[in-house]
Image 1 (cartoon, rainbow, N blue to C red):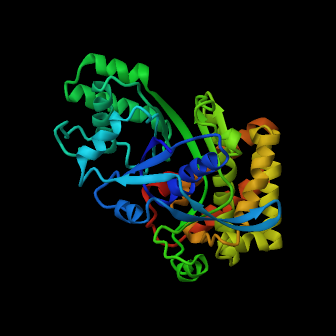
Image 2 (image 1 turned 90 degrees about the vertical axis):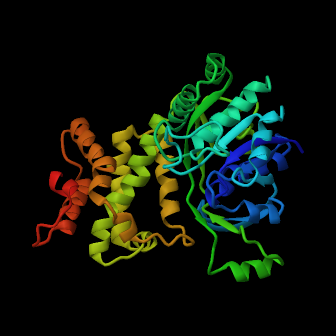
Image 3 (image 1 turned 90 degrees about the horizontal axis):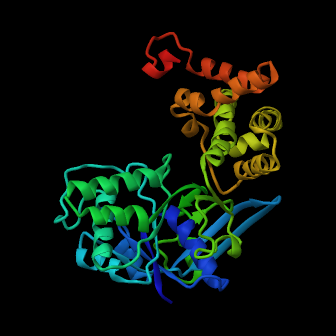
Length: 393
């Protein structure tokens, strides 16, 4: 099977998301391609990945249509890993393979950055955009076509920023104008929105799971069943995710899908957590099991948040999926963890819904207004030691 995908990042999320999807496409016979994983920072898991010949076991666990699911797949979509810090020549060699068509990245929110201090002669340059610029220049010099790039980093306009920084590095390094034109016309940088909770390596369960599998797997990975990939563009003909049954949306703009996710998923979390914590609960799962909190959550979702967004079938379906995700018995999501930075989260995730509800319906939403009261009560103390964001709010 040909190597067709260069992937920056070897962490649990990409292995539970993209690499799992490629495995499914290959298994269903709609795609024929392997992934080469590039380690984007100096310390990583590439040596472990190569020791296991790119193979690992992926558990998907949660609730689907009211039924508890716990499935395991031996994922075989990765051919090998490349560490540019120990073999930079092998990294650049990837650009010379004409079968390579896709570049996929998840280098964390901090990964897409412009340092402006690196050189093309660095082996490798420090930042991900600089490494990518060097790879693209190698591709350009080889006279080959460009790539389709899917950015999975959790920042707005992820691919737009990546493209901007690649061009800045090309100009910083005084590379030919023809190369800059090739970047802009022969490569397709696609903003994407990813959604799947990856719970990673199950440290406490690993010994028992490995005994059941009959082998040691240092890359054992766990994630929820739900997944969604929203991608700007439409490359279904070349990358047939939908045909393989993957929950993908090809679109001209990811913005409304991000708004839906932030308002429904994150908004439900943020509006529920402080009142539930003061009520004596500790995890999201406990909230779903508590009759009063569960009823309040559903009222918040279906009578306040979803109507503000438009009450479409897609909004309602997503909200129902959120309830199943919150009830996942395999995810122990602590309320205090969600409560971190609650003021800034409330301003971004809940306050816009309150204001839009008031404008749309001429009254305040009762549940979300109560969540504001819970926020104030949670932060109320006798000492003036609140942070600047709290004082401004």
